Every structure is written in C-alpha cells, then in structure tokens.
Image (cartoon, rainbow, N blue to C red; front, side, top):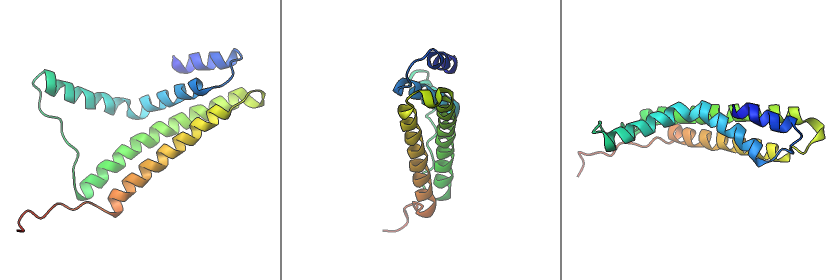
Amino acid sequence: MLFAVTAIDLRGGAEPNWRHGLAAVYIGFTVGLGHSSIRWADARVAHRFAGGPPPVRPPRYGTARAVHEWRVAARWILASAVALALLQGAVWYVGDSGDTGSLRAWQQRMLWVIGVNVVVAASYTLFPKREPNRGAG
C-alpha cells in the first residue's frame, strides 16, 4: 500500500523528497527486520507482563557471537538492499524530469548502513571476544 501511494504521488507530479525515500527505507526495514523485531518485542512483553520466560540473550563470546552478528548484519543488509532497489526504481520512474537528489541521498545512507554492519560483524569475526578465565585467581 505504501509503495503504491508513493508511486501515485510521484506519478502525480510530486517532486521527490525525503518522504519518498523514507517510504522505501520503511518498506526495506519491514522486509529485512520486521519479523525479528516483532519476535524481539513479543518476548519482552511476554516476560514483563504475562509471566513468560526471560528473553534469550545473544551469545557473548567467540564464534557463536560472530555468527549472531553476521545474522543481524544479514537482516540489515537485506533491509538496505530492498530500500536501495526501491529507491533506484523511484529514480528511474522520475527520470531526468525531476530532482532525484533526495532519493540518491537515501541510497548513500543505505550503503553506509551496509558498510557499518559489515564492519561490526567482521570485527567479531577477526577479533572474537574471549570468555574470561573463571578458574584463575
């Protein structure tokens, strides 16, 4: 629905602006992170208000933590890729007749999001946090 309304707005001659870019990013977020965000919130609400078990915490150390970070990064990369594709479609849709600067700015932000997530996940792979030695001392 949001995609259709945005396309209709652009077709009607609206100048592309940050709102059109935000619509694409919101759709990307929903595709890439929607399910995991709902699951995250459900676990916390169930624990807090319905006597459910405490939410499962992510691993803290080693390879398990690196795998967790790559899964999180993959969700963000998917969200950003969907947003990038929608933004590029909007740029092509508007064509040379309109100013697509605001859409291009959102594309740069999405590339930045991808880069940050890859750097974070790679840091946990290259420099894994080691579990403290509890027997020493």
